Image (cartoon, rainbow, N blue to C red; front, side, top):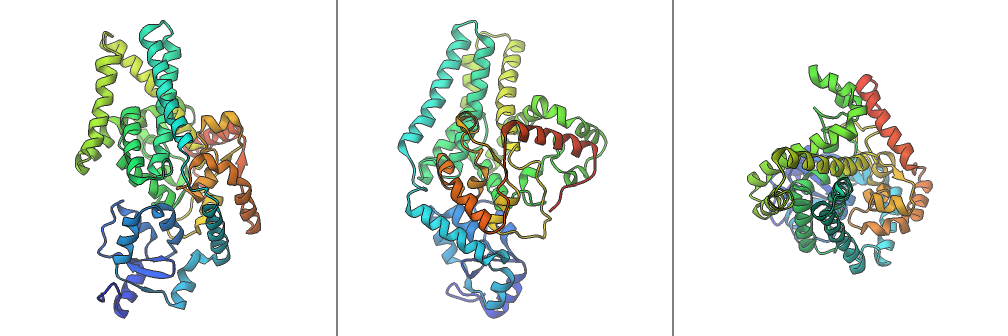
Length: 420
């Protein structure tokens, strides 16, 4: 490795195989780099072009740009660019970059204080209404439904905070995400960021997209179901029926009371631990105080089932029924969004119900853009896709829900995988 931020010739030959990342025509040696976001950097080394991924994940971070600049690097040769540059789609990448530049100049990546106020106010109002109905009136099931849905909506909003697209201030968005996810859902914001960015880096790519790593409770593709044995294999045969009423809630419980607390302790995320503990103290020490333990647990389980099925089912609509990509294949950033993402046909109710993430194609292209702006840019994205012969997949909500559940049934009872 050379000095002054440069790679020696010999180091480049070794690094280019599996330890360099290509960003804007520069090869960066990451062999000794410990990425703050975990192993995601490994998904982008050795082949392919990480330019779009870096810009979309770190466009607002001066710290990330400084860290990148400090890494040993050198300009990629013509041969290296031919092998890796633009993931084989130079014209597509340049058109995407032009669209992004235009949208940025037009203010589409800027935060809207009024939208932030509305979204946060909605969370507060729904919680107040649900708690009032539960604690002061006989409208038990109505209150549990409202509280379950608003917990799910905390998940939607923390998702935006985790992409730093809510206020566009990284520190503020991180804090809001920790509060929303910790108090609203009982989960770790930092864990979510690490895992979710892996999904965005390579959606539906085997051994890369953590949203495919769902055994033993769920298998969205037959390639995943191949690893199931015994009781798990039997469970998967029923997953099309069990997914909404049972599996979603079991996943949530596993996250809330095992996976996320373990991560928080190991990573020493003490502020997140405080919010998670606060949530449980408020639920069992205040809201359900006076309930018998059986009644308290039944109430909590009903609430948790509504919350988890609401958000996990809606997340599943956008990807899970689509083909997967083999681990060794690298797609262009725009191709990932086109081939492995589905939009849900918009209307006022669906836009609210899915918190604008029914525009999943636009979200995967521009994860750092405030999500309420996706509906405005959708025609321009569709035009880009049409120019390059890419599918722009839009489906009605219930059609996509049926496809998702049917795919779960087929995967659980068949061995034919959908692989691109």
